[in-house]
Amino acid sequence: MEGAPGGVPEAAPSIAAWARDALALLTERPGVRRAGLALAEGGGRSLRFTASDRQTDRAGGRVAWCHVDAYDDVPLNTVVRTGEPALGALDDLEEQYPDFIERQRDTATVALAAQPIVAAGQTLGGYVLFFDRPQAFDAGQRRELAQAGVELGAALRRAQRAEKRPAVALVDEPAPPGAVVAAHDVTPDPAYVGDARRFLEGTLHDWGIDEETTYTAVLCLSELVTNALIHANAGCTVRVLLDGDVLTTTVRDGGTPDVGSVEPLDDPFRVHGRGLQLVDALATRWGSELDAVGTTVWFVLEL
Image (cartoon, rainbow, N blue to C red; front, side):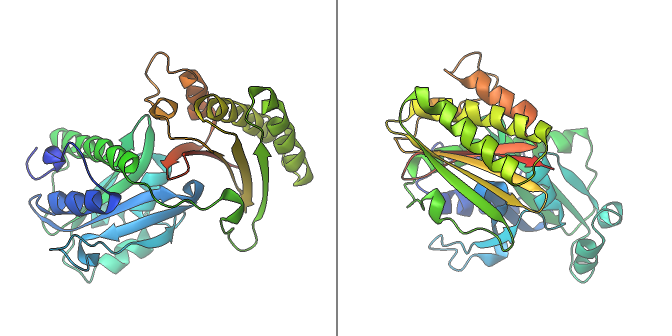
């Protein structure tokens, strides 16, 4: 694949290094004038974003990140939320993203491609390429762009596992203005999965969530809590947040990150891999993050 991340290193020492290398490889692609990366954070409600023109020290590998709302109506954010690519000439994308495309008219960009970054059966983020020359976007090019997302995802997973970032307790994570939030600690014993289910069911009832959504949320939570208690060396914390019509439920274990808990969904059996398949089928989207505490898995239901 010419100019694409086919040369992604076998190991990345940090997420910053991963981003630096990814941006360098993406901008080598013919016609690319700018590249951007977005990573899902905060249960998928926010994205950590950087771009090739935001690097503060290219020689030293420093990359400047900012946080953006995952629901901003721009191609890259839509790709991260849906897992579907968005690509075409500016005129092709104008109807869906009028404000964003209007801002591109004063630049050298004539076409763009936004693709999901995928690994372990989930969308971890996305990348976007801004082209200064027309693109065919034929079947071959689309395959190359999709493969770049797979390769970037594999390298990002390695970087996440290698980097021990300080973790903020779920109860201390800030909530968006106007959102309601509740949290519950689960005792490190699979017998207490029922307590987590009752916590979520009662919370959603108090918030006026309909029975069908509540049933789906409780079913997904049960799978994630069971998975966390089996894989972790301690208990876990459940956090549920209602922000407008978006319900986000997060489970963070208190033990050592276990690769098995986020293995690809098509693996026939990774302890409770079938539970993750259920979450994948029922939730609007889901994801996982690794940190110094352990593993965080979240799912979103859009009401």
